[in-house]
Each structure stands twice: as C-alpha cells, then as structure tokens.
Length: 182
Image (cartoon, one colour):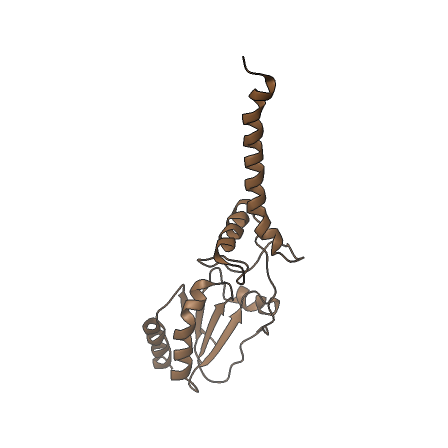
C-alpha cells in the first residue's frame, strides 16, 4: 500500500507544472507591459505582436499569453498623429499601419517606391493606429485590420480600399486607376 505522501506526489507535481506554465505564459506580458492595461481599440494584424523590440520567442509567448488571458494592450507611440486628411486638389493614398505589424513592415519598400514614382501627383499619408490622435480617422474609414489602405480622389471621396498585404504591382495598379479616374 502506498503512503499518503507517495499518493499526493503526482498530484503535487501536476499542480506545480500547471502553475509554472501559467507563470511562463504570463511573465513576458507582465515584464514588457506598461501602466496602461485598457482594452485595446487598435486594429489587428496577421501578427499581433504588441512589443516589437522583444525577441521572437518571447513575442510568441506574449501573444499566447494575451490570447489566453486577453491582455493585449495599446502601446503609445512617439510618432505624430494625424487627425484629419487635408484636401489640396490631389488624390490621397492613406496607409493605416503600426510598428508591430509584420505585413505593414513587408509593404514599406513597395509604398516607398510608389511615393517616389508618384511624388507631386498623389499625397501619401501614414496613419499610426496606435496614436490616439488618429482615432477619428480609424473610425471614419472603419479600419478593423492592418495593413489597410484607403485611396481618396481629389475631392476626398473614397475611391478604393485595399485590405491586407499588397505587392508593388497591386499598389501601382490601384494608384494608376485612381489617377485615371481624375
């Protein structure tokens, strides 16, 4: 017959294992969090990594912890926020993005190429979804996911919306169609 201590040992080990796994999942989020733990209002991305400076394995643990415990948080940014788009007789390319968004980072070279190609003919705007000043634009264009691009004609009317990761060719085609519509 097993002693009471020997019978309780597997249960105690299981409890310790469960507790340690919860601590491991919660630690990255707590270690890299800021004081503001309000429910997020920012759009989501294909990679929802809330802390871009953290190594990838910790990002994965942070994202897993956030999915389990629901503690994604808004991180304020130092970039100036855009509260409105100024109309000046040219069409507009408005890109909703964030520093933590991997697809947004992948699109940057293509967007920069379009800025060079259409300089002077199209206004390019980058809207940081983590900046509080940009909330009115996020609501106005109903941004739910990023990357999210809105093309406006010269009068400020929505011409086309591009959701998700786009190639240079897709962006070029959309801007050419926008300019042809003028």
